[in-house]
Length: 242
Image (cartoon, rainbow, N blue to C red):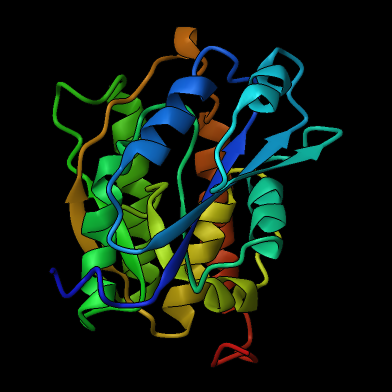
């Protein structure tokens, strides 16, 4: 038996959902079909969807699945905040419902944690030409990541990745306040301020375009830069997690 299977860790997979009626059934199926090396739960937060997402979630039947509903759309950061507050696992990872990320990569994120090499693990997208829908999207992501590296004297490859795996209590201690996509920059900025450098592993990625429902925009990139600058200049008052 693999040593990874013997380690008693529970992983909370947190899935924020907003208007993903066409994809949510496949997203749940894919996430729950993976052979994980530990116990898991899938915590889904329906963030005020106005399409048939809620009905699809209502038909889902798996003991590992929990669904929480926001009456109004509050943003990805707010949805993750709700999911983390309800998570029962020792570790967590975020998995969007848009099918851009492959949950089969999650065990690769877990491996450095389970064998003691890392506490925080990021999935690093390679952005090959076959996977990225927009030149400016890729350049924007690289620009925000470079800004973080310059501001915090670090070297990470993909700040905006959805796949961020870490202890649940660590995430709670970060006290993430950004309600939208700015939470990605806030999480990374606060980790780097604490001198916690994510361990990165390569993952697969298939971007979707605007016509398929892509929600992030250039405004989110500007906000990310502002958040990174704010976190870099913030007075140090929380050097260690609670």
